[in-house]
Image (cartoon, rainbow, N blue to C red):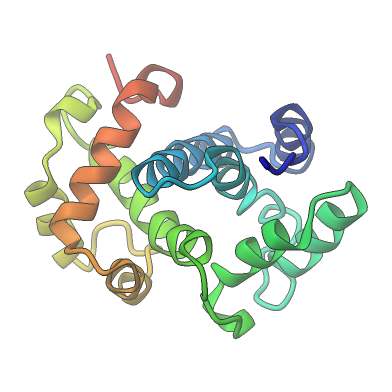
Length: 190
């Protein structure tokens, strides 16, 4: 039997109600694409994974502080009928919450959040701001440059990928492939 989740339209409305920064909205869409691809790769529920990706940072603008981010958002999601599996996965992507990552869904959002944002940042400094200009090796090279995209937590990137049991190069390549069909909407294609 297939589980029915809250619909994407509700998730999209919440994201846009709580998030006014267009870059942060695009980040949600990008992580949604990666999470859906991860679900397909592993025979999991793409709608479930997609909702977690889309909503993982929806409360960040209003509640950016550790101890509030994802905690306050989780309460909002519960009030709107989102099940605990979604709320727990979202809360688990913030290391400081101390929530174990016991499922592929939880490990996936943790691995995908920072690294997807980093892949987008690398793309945006390319001459044509196009995903076709980015390779896994170019992302890894930039990851070693601590001055580039300083806000990206490198420990979370490495720890997240390790939690999936894949190499950094393979997961970066996976993210690039997952984002390509969405490049236009994400502003990553001239």
